Length: 430
Ligand code: UDP
Ligand code: UDP
Image (cartoon, rainbow, N blue to C red):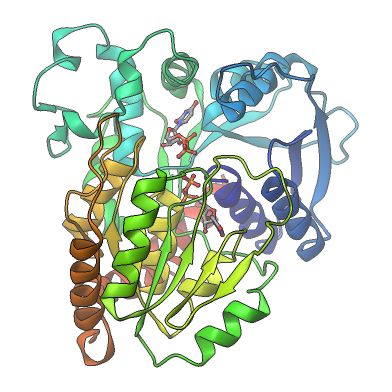
């Protein structure tokens, strides 16, 4: 979902700007949320033409099913035929995870190939830079990487999986990173005020020479989705403004049983109202859990997909306890909701650093991924949540305060005349 959600938003933004959009999606999908979200876009934007790209059954034995599925898509790239489209397309936008497989095919089809990178400008810098230094002393320094033009990148924020050259993710990461220079342009779901330094380094040729132009078009706005389920909405509507903590670790991350237990204790201790999305599996194949929404005295526990965007937009919400997937970060930024970072791996530690620097949130050092992760106790969780909701709620959330300011800047960026608005229009004109 971390790749699909922003991609669907990009499609809706292009369509709203009167582009003729064709959406190519793999079939079958891995999870139920993927097919639900694709259908939601197509019914909200009937002018978008869908093409179903059949891919062979993939063998996920032992491998992460999403990466195995991805590998199957990459292996099917030669099957991409767009000759039936009229008028013929002038450009194609490719997800980063497919870049090295689909850029050459697109060139053969005479399409200008743009890459959509679904994480931050900072991660794009790592992504472009790391494959060039991998295996050298520069990649294996103890404390941080010196990516030219960027603040020091903590070694602890480099996904540990990148040190395993045989890992499927790592192989794709390196191939896709090297292919970036063959694209006509790179599109990012970020904005100037959030990542101006990294964007300038990327576009100034400092990170990697020969990188194509990088355009920030974020935070991409959600299209009208399925709406918030009635029981959660009714509960939220009864809460005072800026009093509730929303807790979610994204579409993929499942926590240990022990940590889930302490988190539950912590939320009760905080004394705040809460909406807590509990996820115990990385892939949601089943449509509905047995008891999907449980209303308690102080909060609501949800064991199914929720419309996160609708929750963050609700005025009762004061704080977002998040794993800091990049989409979650951009969604919090768009709504000016303060974040308590709890990164669990991949790009999330880097994203947690970004939200601290810009004032959107705090990272108390919880999480960090890897084995041997310590369980954070309920008492500590309760205290931090109570404190941050008190600061972030009511009168605390004045204009100009960190997270409120980030929200204003985010909305300015995507508003008419803003930097991301101009980026998208420029891209379309090109
Ligand atoms: N999301 C949602 N409801 C859920 C879980 C996730 O709407 O129950 C959305 C969330 O708003 C975001 C995406 O799914 O748009 C998850 O992307 P993110 O980059 O935050 O994390 P990932 O799932 O890739 O780790
Ligand atoms: N990523 C990438 N190329 C790939 C696979 C992943 O650039 O081939 C990036 C992705 O954009 C993100 C990070 O790696 O910055 C984490 O990957 P992903 O979103 O697949 O992991 P998840 O958060 O969904 O577990």
